[in-house]
Length: 151
Image (cartoon, rainbow, N blue to C red; front, side, top):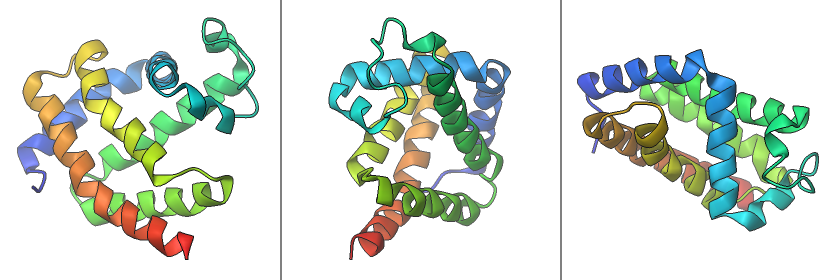
């Protein structure tokens, strides 16, 4: 399925809510991610030993969460040209692969986004579905790049 223009606009409108409080949403997203995927915190050496109940106040955690959501924002800004967004994600795969970040970890985080945004950032059902379509559209180029990096 390919993201429609109307769906792209819905995502971009929803992202304005996120952008207004990007640090809070980033922190909430990652805490939720680590609750669902506790083993993945080990990949974040600068804050992996901090309990999740305390991690929100850690500057390294805040830097990481904001960086990730700013990266998602770059994708959202380029929804009119999905190839640009896909190329940006390919680059993220290339930079993360040497750190042992797996494709499954990318997928788990991106798969979490639609429900998260619906539950905490005001995305309605149609907008959450648009996020799901966007994630589905962007996974193949990411998987291709991961396969290329793995050989």
